[in-house]
Length: 268
Image 1 (tube, rainbow, N blue to C red):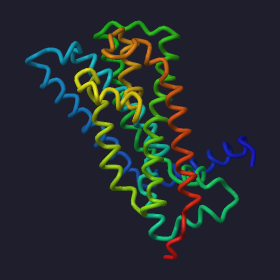
Image 2: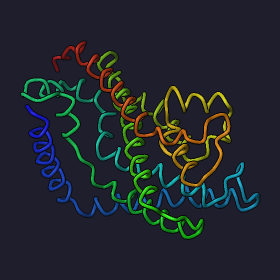
Image 3: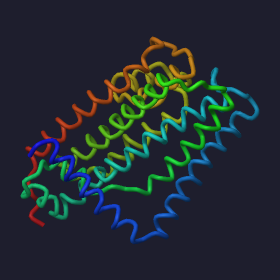
Image 4: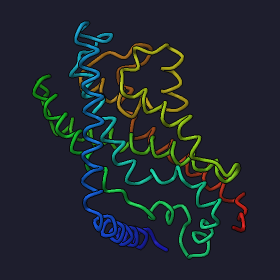
């Protein structure tokens, strides 16, 4: 099947998934409200933390809010595309994963297109409002170049976070477990992105730059946009976010396909 046909099929599957989710509109609205409330609570916690000291390192509240919003925005897209990968173990244990292998489609594509969570609209709404507020407070000038750079950073962030979810799901092919790895790896890594990497020990900074590259999700791109220094790293690191995203996701895909080649049905 050609790439064009895969794209056309993907949008058909997504369209069907959206119609199904909109059948439960109250739950849809409540999820959006819940997400906005949760992230607003985190932002308020940041404000309380900085109320006494004004800055964390050399980052003020609005700069940290920009960092936080960029993380949440890319995570929203990641949830739409890849969040259900963390539950791959459920499909393997139930024996329902086999149906992705008997259809004339790439199993990875088929599994990815299976679900499209539009409730992430709450994260988009929160992030956009924060970007507008922060832009006024920091007097940011959004040129076409900066907007394109921001778009590239978002794409890189989605691929990096999605790549880690794909790697986590791949463990299910060997261990029939993946959900637990999400809480061990993904959850702590995402929490690191809420604050500037400069406040963490040098070892943690290097891990998030070269091993699990979550520094490229928001920290390095933000330092470029806000013209801030990056201790231990060149100031231009943020420009590599899209490339790092593509490479990391490519590696994640290879790991997933390697796991698939070793998959044995549970027979359930």
